[in-house]
Length: 145
Image (cartoon, rainbow, N blue to C red; front, side, top):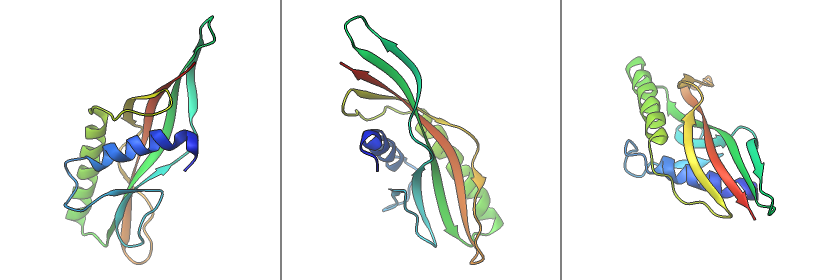
């Protein structure tokens, strides 16, 4: 994990892992997903500076976006289970949008996590596992003295 994104990624991971819809012992991993099942968060790109302001004293304020994808993999789910996975991921997205976010380090503050699309079916290998994905964006600010 790149050092400058680490605090944002860790806050997103901690927020996702506090989702009340997780089963006992279930946790999101960072950029790693088991072949048969699991939950993970994958960065899509680096940070994007959406807005920047500078003061006459040299202080810099930036509003940044960090896009990521949440993934849920299940082994060979039936149609009813697929509908449940889609609804579960939709609930996860809603939950992440409406949270108090953990504190960050190095002058960063997490402002929001937003869905960038609805949950959708991702890869479906021949072994009947299915991966559902949902694109998200973390919005945060950085103040540099």
